[in-house]
Length: 116
Length: 109
Image (cartoon, rainbow over all chains, first blue to last red; front, side):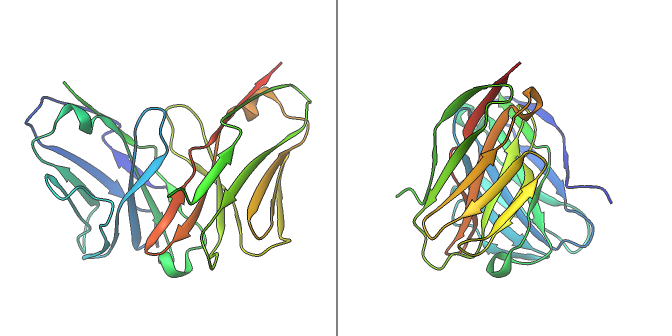
């Protein structure tokens, strides 16, 4: 049973380009969470999705960021018109149960985005 | 407002020197307290979930305990391979997991 798969592991984008980060949850998991980690800072919640639905996006910046989790395929975190401040490690986690009864959440290895 | 506070920020131990890491939380209606280990350049690795005061869980040299206001991660006779950042997290409101900033543990041979 493969774990949470994220790709790419490393992504370099020039300012103004778009970044697309992909996350395939563990088999049997339908709840996906995205987090951002800046150097020397903790993990910050961005968005929580269930298949085809955004459950909570309170941690997502209002502009340039969007996320989806389609019926088929991985969850996508999209960052449009990237700026240097978007450089960070982005982690995806998945769980079998939702936030109201979460028991375990497993993380992927992350995508390290560098904006040059 | 910090809901999860971890201490110390960094801890340096000699191999075999047991110690404890602290995680205090202020959320009401605890729906679980989660411990993770994170190695540099890697994603957090799930260790334990604790649900009620008095609960304890063990894994190799690690034992996690929970009270009404805090959790401790006890490390018994640590080895260099236990060096990592240890994170704790709690669900809060609609946020699945709110993380503390972690404790960076270094175990020196």
